[in-house]
Length: 437
Image 1 (tube, one colour):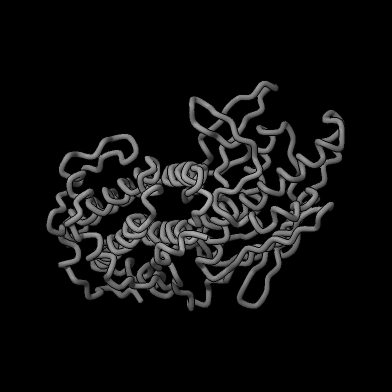
Image 2: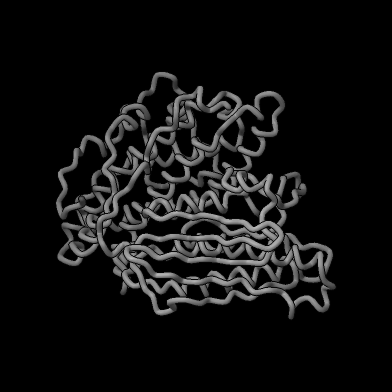
């Protein structure tokens, strides 16, 4: 549990031996590391990562997050305590992921895209360790601005990770033997936990009405579904020239404490998959000119139960072919067509930037017919959505009826009971032999 003045080991917050950093953060994807950073990053004898990775993680709890949020209203000491907690936790969590990257097979870790992810993580660790312990509100403001910069800078990480994954899996002999989903689950689950930790502190300093940090105390489920549905319809229209309606039924007045950015991403991904299935199935069956008025709607039903909420999304998109049912949870798996654009492999279809509230995917490539667009897809949508749901104790399940459609069940735990705590948020990936089938 987070308290107003936690007892922190300040030694953990000081720059480790051999790590020299600066507050001015370089662009991790656009600027080359300096010689000192590269020397330390690539040094066999530097043990900074191992030293931080072996330290125990303090699990986030809902009660602790809410208590800290309420305590920040009492005075500056609690804001400083929140900053110090983040300063202690983030380096340990980053170090565990860096260690996971180090343990990957040589073919994977030398891929240029995966290597850039490693370099970005190392630079962030170096930057955080170089920041002196926060002891004043002025330092807290600077540290909060630094956190925002780091969070924003890491938004493209999924693109690099997905591209690297696709490339290593395409290599003959070795690529097909790699089993990297456990590694990816840990990487992305950790990303959720780190961003929750960082953004909780960032938003506590903003004092948004109706929020305690990142948690909206009365999030409207129906409004969230409608918001995701409107965006999905917009992009579906840009991609295909038409889109199914989303009909919301059930308990439309239901509100729950939850993180809206998590909810937006999960619901959008589910609606996106249903929209694509409906449009593509019925484009094959009807003339385009007469199709739009006959396109079957997607139905989203809100069901409130004891301690949880279930959103059931039903479509008439023909269902999932049996050979693909077990593959929909694989990272990087997609049925969308691929093409080369400016020498880079892109995936055709609908896409959404999985960053917290970061907006829409940037790849909008005009095609030959009118104003339609192709949007980038990574094949991470469903498995990442399930990680989001499970992070707060929920789940995501898919039931397919071949020849008719698909029902997707998004279950959310009501966070009002304050009994949630992180599970498996910062585990180590299994030993290297298990990376192979």
